[in-house]
Length: 214
Image (tube, rainbow, N blue to C red):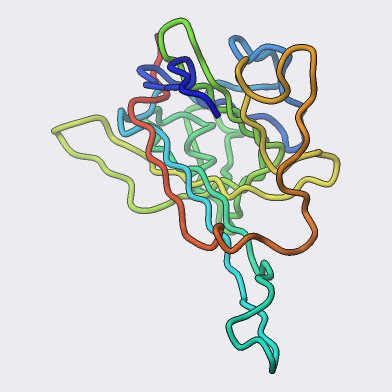
């Protein structure tokens, strides 16, 4: 690990894209082609990332302090507040909808989480970092706000899910990540059904000012 200024991110601009669940990540995150859809403006609160591992300490008669920590559940979510009241964002908030009639968005009587692939691009000047998820269930995450002081918002949460054909639960995309040029890195954590004790705490990161048009 080295002191690397290039790994610091202040995302002054950000973008959120969705596509059908299982859609592969685009070759370029700068301008994702169809079927990726730009979800448009969101609040300057930006993006939240929630990552929580629930564990159980396994003890024995001879080792009451424990000998192993097993993973019971993994909760991984992304959150943002959409500002465009259009078919895509309304469908994400209300769990689907009827858009067969011109000029009408019909809220479904039997709403359901919208399973989509997700791509978030955080832009810091000439640099950017992407976050790709093959499958996530997008739902409302609270009351929509509508008042005369600011843009009306639709708070959304994307619960990251396992997609059978995806190699990873999610992928962070940037030139400085992964294997260095000319060599490969050895993974530091091989999944074996257990998790290090250091991973038992809840981690929530707030990244300000994302998802507004340049």
